[in-house]
Figure 1: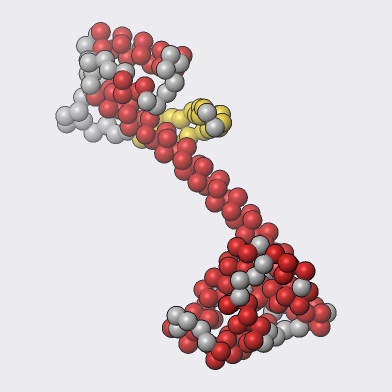
Figure 2: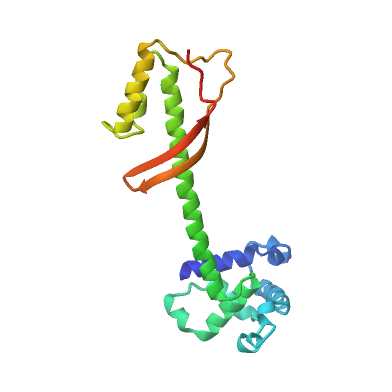
Length: 216
């Protein structure tokens, strides 16, 4: 939960109304700055839809500068969660930030982390495919020299895939095929990568190539 506190504090500092005020030009806030922050938050909360009904009377629509200074400067511990006044303060700060309440903020952050992880995982797999294709292209450029060592660091040794790729490429080398690299407008493009298996110790995918190369 302490990371949630830090995250909320960071978002308050980055809020456009805070950043574009005198607070945005100050590295270390003092008592007078928290008074200004309190007024900024009060102004925003007075227009917040979440506080148009009964919730305004339940939690209020202001935060004192003393409470804000305490929130920013104290290192809160887990036991703070049970303090109802503290939770109401967090609700109001989260409403100021554009969320429905503290729970909405926590759920949003949690889902964002999941989405970011999925994006990182997809980027990792995409880069893996690109690295393989780049090495395969270098492998073809050596034709008619048959050097599968370039591929062995990218696929399982003695795998059916490596066996098939080695056999097919060996046939091309035996026929003295080579890659045309001079005055050749062909390019190498990878698109439509589809992950088939994604496990810690193995990755399988399908992908299509376009304009791969010219052999003669």
